Image 1 (cartoon, rainbow, N blue to C red):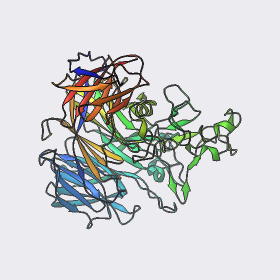
Image 2: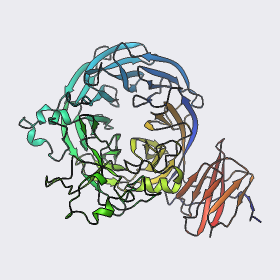
Image 3: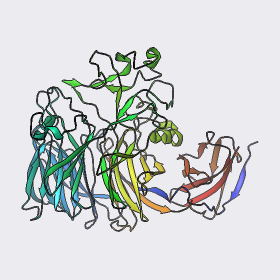
Length: 586
């Protein structure tokens, strides 16, 4: 006979020892009904004046989406980019001015930035560098900073130089002035040769420094004076003085020691499950997304440490550890280390690690940090890294999709190659607290951290992706002041599914109190399995300190991993109504 306890809902009082709770409630999804697998990195910036999103959901156009009712986003038109190039690579908007980065005929040709008003009417266009993959307005709207990646051809016979374009809109988009920042002065023997950090990765076949640097993502400082540019393959971040139109400095980001406690990783997709452990491997941070913020008069930049391997027919740097020769003086138990159950399956770079140049790897460097990091904007020093927390939390909260590829039946399939793959980071303020929202490209979903103390950020929650949303590429935070609802929103764009997810954000300093009503939970007390009857929705388990320990979207939850004691189950139904129940774990 099952032990059933009928619980009359009670008020839970919880001291906010784990900080302010933040709930992400899915309001709606926008599905453009395109075939799976997008061609570009989808973004969907928001214009508060027109209450519209501008999303590059298709290769040659930008879709205009009415967000005046966030529960029912609706396409109201599109902007045709075919007169200006071949791919709509990125979109930014400020004060109802829409800027679209467009690829030239090929990736190696010069690209364009095309300006439109919020109705999609053409204003002007300017020429920028090859592969303008990302652009961003300064807070005032005067400048647009463009990252021109300058990627090589597949056979690596044509590798254009990377660059930064700064578009000055002081006289409006009808009369823009463009300045280009190249990197040839940092080439060996050039005027700024000695200023280039030699630790920065420059390793393309026959490439100069200017050719090898590939600007990926741009973040603007809150005062609009600096741009932080991630150089993903180079494992570095470049600081740009916008008004001067010049490189200020280049920070090499260094390596993450996965042999240290707290920096563990699951290194294999063939080890039978979740096995997060210490291994003699270094992670190259290699951030994609980057954001900036200030606290107490100190500037920081924050990175989503995705990782990136150069993979071309003319140059492919990735290799599995099992296929490499390891130096016997630097590695112990090489035979067992190179098995599939250990790190034999792990993808590492063969471009780095053979310091003795004898064909044997003295160190191993894998792609990405599987984390997010906070760095000093003045020195480039590491202030905080989330360590192995992304893998630990997803293993605990959503074990069925741990290190998956975001679709069914791919459990653990990404452990050998960048794991959860943090792609993007955006910062937003809710109830006077700053939060970082980090999108995980492979497993999907959003990690949320309180970053009020940059040295000690606090994990708040992990929101798994909604059904049908695959591969989050970028997020846009909409403040309560600019939101059509008067409530902060997060718009998450998904590359592989060509969909947008719109979340409402709400904060409180305690676990929400119960609504009136009865539901059934059994068995209670429990040794592990909990079953809930009387409602459908999202379940969250908190400890006595108010810290989230597990999430489920089904009415069954396994908390066998939790220590014995008292917990609280928070249940949120499809209408957003919340109930809280006391649970005893034996």
